[in-house]
Image (cartoon, rainbow, N blue to C red; front, side):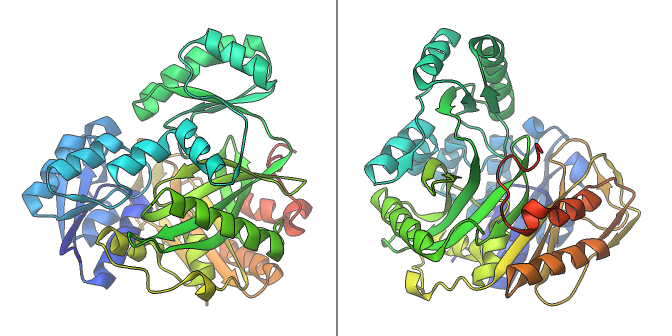
Length: 434
């Protein structure tokens, strides 16, 4: 096991990883920008290094400074969290070159599985249905020809996109001519990669993803599905597990296919296979995220399996000590993402309590929410034996959660949970449009 890990991230996920390391007896190093000098993850870590100015390019995306910090502090491994450098093959290769373990997929797996065209081909060969689409498109003329062949509407997506960014719906050729160069430029600015591709727009549908965990000895388990269909502009707001749209027989079938597909590519670590579930119960494979997901907490609450600890263990070469038949999906877990609408100083902060109530956050009273990074303040997660009870528990927890001084979406989350379509589980990706 690693003696010291550098956490190459910030915010609630950095706090989450540092806490897991403390429980495992692993020393931690935090990196931070000048804007995050007083952040919670810095205070919790055993050591810390300032790596630059507030802008991500000068700090959390600065590969050389992060590697230097790891070497200077003697960290044997780097955990990238999610976002930032978590799916950056060049950074993973730099870690390897410097004798540092990248806690995530290998460089080879990242190259193969992060390429949307390659992973779709591999999953199709493994028996999963895939959404009709293209490889990387180099010109608007190629995009127009491909869209005409697929049929409008289509989705224009960034190859290196994530977190709901880099996605546009295109309804006609006129939109394509305008959107294509914009998408390329935005993708290059946000992800350092301007490559884009097209997919058929599947509608109506639900966004359902399956969480997997694999070790280097060929053991693969699937920890059920999460329904992530409550989204605004492709940004997830509420997630739950299991999905109210998936019956036990269909769940068992898709879990079996996912395990077989993941084993066929030799993947190691945590990962998520994302699907669109249509009204005919077809699971259309979209992509595989080769990192920890923001909403991993929902699965943890449902299964009582710590995904962060197992991500670290599998990266250290430790075999899974449980099998698929030991995974029990009983009850229901729901997560509400609490986002800031404006930056500001947290004047008062109160976290709800009670059995099976969890709030993953980096907030502290008096802390400052800056404008430089993602708007996520924290994730409120609850678990109960039935979906109805879980809904009541989440509403009670939201009513108890207090974040004063920063405008947030707490009240909106209460309103969304109270809508009939969510209460009865019939919602889909049109939920926020209605």
